[in-house]
Image 1 (cartoon, rainbow, N blue to C red):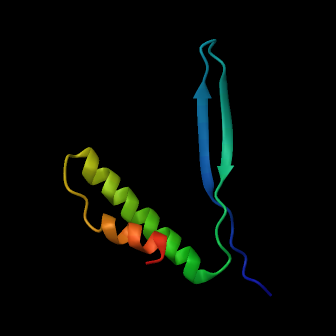
Image 2: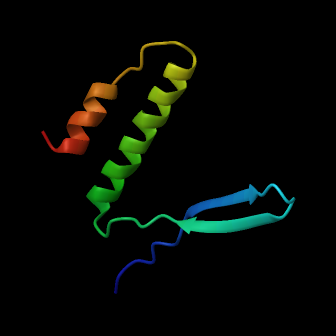
Length: 73
């Protein structure tokens, strides 16, 4: 029997010019293998750290490694 994996995603809200508000849930589809899920989470972590560093005007660490892992080199 397969393990339950749960669901995760982002809730996005938008306000239009006429003042109406709309919310949507955007589910994130995860790979089925544990190693692929771990790789995906690691890539997201490194990318988020790089974005934070860039926003602070710093040089991101490990960003090149993230691109290498993503491309499978």
